[in-house]
Image (cartoon, rainbow, N blue to C red; front, side, top):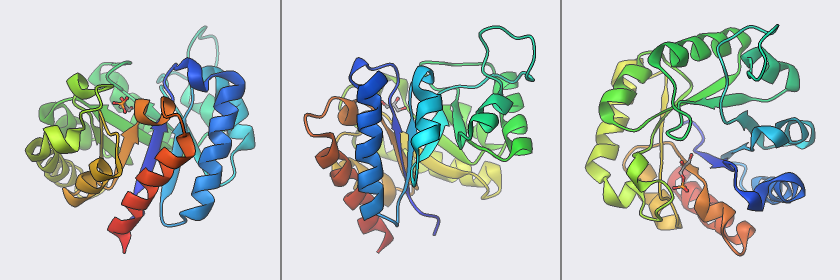
Length: 230
Ligand code: G3P
């Protein structure tokens, strides 16, 4: 079994920008040390990406978005190769808060595959993730947009669709892509159910960022994910 992944998307939340973002990275590194059976990923705001990439130890650092353009005269873009140069480990693409066309998803995945960095390609419906899975990114994330930030998890609110997403991702990618899910995940129980339904990891944002004790919340997620391994 591939190690379950816990991906913390820090979005543009004020609580995790600048110095506070670096404090969050320290927390994630501390927890990662205690849970070697779990892959931890953080996707900081782009303004913090370089510093995160410089400081990371066990934790992987992904961009929240990338553009399928070469390095060169492209103002305001994020070339995949720039992420590689920065020593970022991967990127999200097509998050529901940063949607792009299928053509762009496809080109970002190819460029990332060429440069050997990871891609988490997100989709909000079974139909969308089915098309994306055929491109065989490392991870395909099922994230129903209406549940994002609600505290009502995809695993509790949409169990049948979650199971269907896992099946579709595995079938359409020829067992290459790893199915994961996100939206509203707030408790260890949400994580446990997600893994029980076949996802091999989770994407989470607000429950971690807004937690009064981020370390405690992350340990709750990690120990639920770990219990699925043993
Ligand atoms: O990328 C993760 C995300 O969109 C889920 O957000 O706040 O529901 O955990 P949240």
